[in-house]
Length: 166
Image (tube, rainbow, N blue to C red; front, side):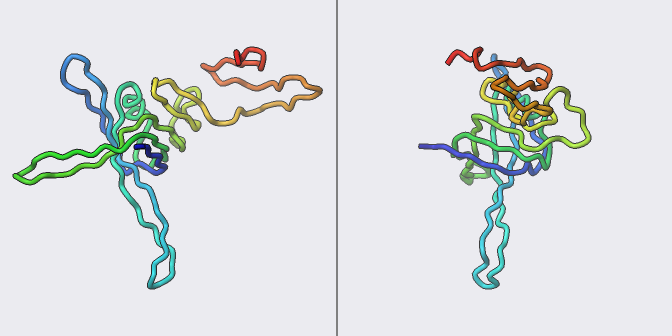
């Protein structure tokens, strides 16, 4: 099984390019810094040991990452590891990167108006649609088995339990 889940911060702004050829697929690359805390054997102090993991995202999700991510933003990435190699100056260079299936935005962009819901925690999944994971604000508690009244953010539809088909 080849499966990876990472949580970390972008080390620089994402880079978006488009593939050559007929389909012009969006390709976004960025690097995520993830920390591993270890105890130093000599000093017995805890130390951060960062790893810098290259991430590649394709399609609509790539365009959304380029649009809404920036250096320092915290993300959760799930995907798979891909290795490869190429020749440079007569030497073989080996590469390892994570091909993302989904990128979840865990921190908001401070000081920027993102529009409805985009300043909150959310993600752009495989289909490129935004999904919000932040709890609804101003929720009223239900009394006597009445459904709770919730302020629904723009672009979302309120559902009752009877509306769910399963």
